[in-house]
Length: 306
View (spheres, helix red, strand yellow):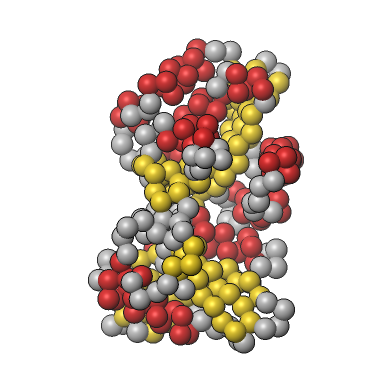
């Protein structure tokens, strides 16, 4: 088994990512956007019997000259199904060859559901896995609407019959910056962490056509904007990344209408999977119910392993 840590071909990386409908954190543009902020990124391609079998993107955190930790979130992305033994060999090869100096630590948080160990049996779990809601967009719009929770669908119908209007926000910084400013204020108020504001500007322009990287939708009532959502697009998948609503938007269930319009638009672009983001039924029960009521499947990851 051979691991290549350089010499990657971007179109090939993107093609594998697209075929797997892989997570945002394994998208080339995600790593490139972080690198522009000074965050070290490593990328690996694993070869078995002269055939590529996996690729993995790592974010590096350095420890004041003592060493570093390489974190692979929701990867590797597999080119083809492997046996548990072969998967274990891939993890072992990555750990052995990771190009870091000093004290080296490799942490893998794979796209593996809780209870499905795969090739992780020889590794030690150091953190439990987060949960997210994954919505398959391949069914017809009629079937997607039918799987909505009855109350969720009722609120959507109310939004469609209301005076709200939905608009696509442009990709120039000045057109969406107000939404990111609102997101930063929400983080401050709720003491939440997240991607830095500059990351979004980098990601929007990470490829030649910014409109292919991002979708931002805004709900207006008359001349007032009352809610908005931002989706980051990566290959054949997308991630709901930012959401904001005013009191009026919350009262009118504007996010139900925005999310449905987002589903329609993403599906028309050939997006197959929508990651609705993390759910916490204790800390944010209302948000969790909103996401789960779309008919999406809750994915609880197996955890982080060293």
